[in-house]
Image (cartoon, rainbow, N blue to C red):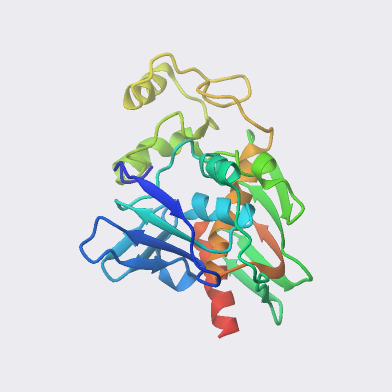
Length: 285
């Protein structure tokens, strides 16, 4: 999505209690990065993990798929810097997991108990995340971009949710007016209209539309009466809100497992999500 590189990825079994780890097979020492919050090095439009020479970009959709499908332990081999974006959702990772199934490793899941309520705030954006002790994992998300197109969207997940159908297929999104800025800032170099929902919040003239069509090499782009580019159909009316929940589940997997906690998030994003994960890790230590 962001680096524009091609990568081959293998999702592989791992021993019990080893957690989620990435191995960069293209580097000489084949270094391993643990999917833990202290390894987060960048949150500009995606979540990046780093450890010494090894870097892995855009890990959140894959981590969300693993969390949503009940995977505790996995080794991900990657021969380049970025996890493939595919269709911008977690669905392409879910399909092979469903096909092959999961192995019961014969040991009970070790849930992470939260000793007290924790809150993280971002005064500039107004975002906040509250993590409270609970008997089981659950998460509620409220998304508000002050957008006439999106409105205010809510999404919820717990262990009874059919993640594969209700959350996993929900794709990433971008506002039309952000696209040229992101390209100029060396991001979304692998982005196209097949892997993102494009929201047209403000009036767009034919010249702007033609410019974006050339950028994506896709003639005939138009704006639907609902305020989206006509490149794709929404899976759900609140798909963007559900995708923010998808991202949150992936970023919070960086606490190192499943939390017995009720997570309430208002206007979440990768920065505050990973700050919350780091705060949990620090509190547990």
